[in-house]
Length: 214
Ligand code: PRP
Image (cartoon, rainbow, N blue to C red; front, side, top):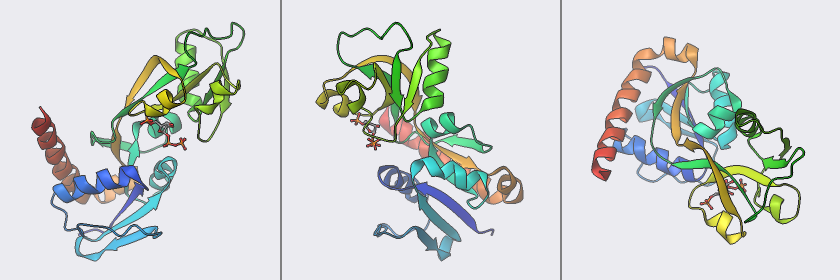
């Protein structure tokens, strides 16, 4: 059996993704002591997890230091990296939307859009024929309209709480987002059997979860 290195996003998504792996029957410790460890070895399964910022997962996978990874569709759309997208895990479901202060029009000349997704935002506004100026931020995007930095933001909405608590309203739905299993193209060829076994087990689990929800 080949060793498998899996890049995982730290935080919320890790816990959900780890749960799916447990449900798929992988022999993993029930609880992972997250502490500050960035690498977790599971010798029984010949699996090694590397934990990174969500935006960095596709970087590790593209460079082949991780064979596979779990990445949000938002990150994949934004970065367009050379990785194979193998499976929609249907976890961490949310969406990307534009938002702003209530009852406001966008500035007619080059409205400003604050976002940590410059490519997604640019593509969206280009698609609807709006010429915009993108202001790239790294977080706390909701501040931008409140302090007059931007007309609109383009950001993830999950529960909608952040928008609400900051007095913003949603304007346009842009795209749905969930976590995806991705693979390095070379690993996919070289460790095909191992990776496909994992995909099959996860797929079964994802489908069962779906039918449980219906
Ligand atoms: C994300 C996103 C929103 C928030 C949406 O931020 O950028 O701010 O979650 O979630 P909600 O709809 O459930 O309120 P994140 O927590 O990743 O922090 P960030 O500000 O660093 O981007």
